[in-house]
Amino acid sequence: MAGSRRLELAEALELGPGWRHACHALLYAPDPRVLFGRIPLRYAVLMQMRFDGRLGFPGGFVDTQDNSLEEGLNRELREELGEAAAAFRVERTDYRSSHAGSGPRVVAHFYAKRLTLEQLLAVEAGATRAKDHGLEVLGLVRVPLYTLRDGVGGLPTFLENSFIGSAREQLLEALQDLGLLQSGSISGLKIPARH
Image 1 (tube, rainbow, N blue to C red):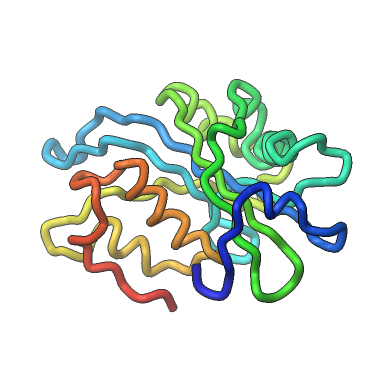
Image 2: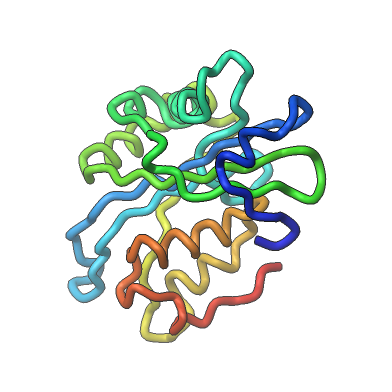
């Protein structure tokens, strides 16, 4: 990830008390529906529009009273997504990566949690009643995991949005590693450079 260095989780957890830890999660679910009768959706992947107008993943800073990174992340998910987030727990087995930024002493931990479609739909339906809705979180958005016939619409256009920190790179890495794209690879996409 540009401007950051990847850390092993154990290494990140051993950093001194001057470091803050932020945890974010990509939430996804299998989605058997078909768009316009011809484009299989395959998966629904959630991101959120943040207070600063950038796209990111739900989550935030872990507080000192949280007993673990995952406890802090699950608290943040309930605050940002509402009570439907209490129906599942992000666990250590959902962990994907940690990165230390080049600026302030912050380590970003990234998770990916597979939900049922019913759980994901419940999160979407209840998000407007969440504590942080309209404040830290302006709304949820689904990532289009397809490319339209013009070669531009869908995921390539979505990737032209402004993302916070390394969220764009985390998204692309997770989509590829989890096999969420039609081809299972991002190599064939015309992915625009980050602005």
